[in-house]
Length: 289
Length: 269
Image (tube, rainbow over all chains, first blue to last red; front, side, top):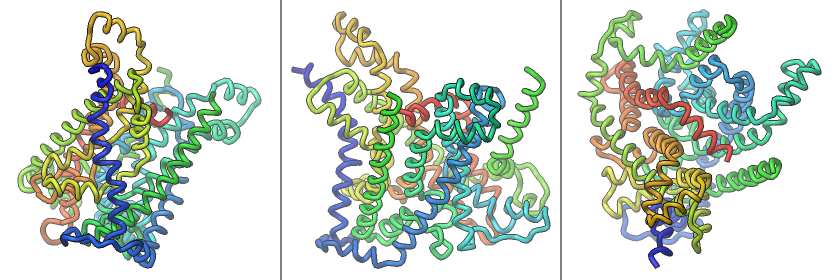
């Protein structure tokens, strides 16, 4: 009898944590999104789809959706292009490439808050590194983080700087799976380096690219920390991402209903992307079999 | 080493230093006085660290981060290993369903549980406690998924030999599986520790009491709520930032390869 119970007892602690802090919260969010509640009052009246329609009628929601989508659409291709280019140079196991890989990878495991703080200094108007470099060339100061057009680009640069090493490592793993005979054959044919890159490297790591593409888009839609530290969504909402908006509605305004409605909408969007991802990865496995 | 290899290595070193220069410069800056920094000179001091640790409570934040990340890692890896053993070695009704639920957590974005977890913990009086910081962080299925795959690669004959000798399942887990899965367990422990060390949004939400701030929350606060009038005291902020960065950088230098292996295995699987 005890024998039969053993696997259940072993799995129980993890399952309990997952149920309480991951699965039940999805249902709770859904339920709260149909209610009006400020976290304080004793009752939580059911208001149907009100929270959703109100959200869809705010400028802030559409702006946050636009800014987040813009961030994803610009930053993901930049990351992947840089990563595949750099990875194709660092794929060989030499001391030089291992060294550079380590340096490039380091930011992806370090504190996002620290990185955001350091880059707040880099892009500070006075005494910042970026403006110091500009002044070397006699160029005027730029107010990077106070400019509604530039602030989003700064966020993109910082995020790319942090995540690039991860993309590179994944690409290197993908590239190392490519049979070297293909490169040798191309070399025999007198293929030039860029030609080999375009005709052989890029198509062969397509599964890796799909994987990174979907993972990075999902991640981009959840960006929060860099924005919270560097701009708080400003100036003039130009960097206000969906999760930053969620944090503000939920934990500054304590509008639990509307915050939950926003969480549910973002959840549905990300789950759709995640399903696309598992389809894509499923296909990759199929190819390899 | 051939001379052109040495040249390449030096070039790679320079490129790496250039890439990391903002962080390297911030560490350098943390050892200067603010006056020297703003007037363009250099004057060595440890005063920024003294003030960050003393006046601005960073010793406490460091302690909190170590405690919280340490306990999340310990509890997280324990429950994950137990579950992974169950999923890898037992055929039981509901087992596949449960494993599916574990794998599915990898797809579930964490923001959906932010408000509900806040309410749950408020309901049982665990906001503003260490437990409130720790418990929700354990509900991640990645380590269990990864370890289950790894344990399946260990020959079953080893378990069976131990069972023949009269060992209990727990004993098999502890004496056979855990020692053989050590590299995977270490990789995952490291992964959990780093993820938790860098975690920001949950500690920001779950804690209002300054004495319970983790380094991430403390650093963000110190930077945003600029102490004093006038320009930001960058050397002080960078000392705090260095305290936040350094443990992970030090760990990284020691165990980079384990980390890379864990991450690429997770991605390619």
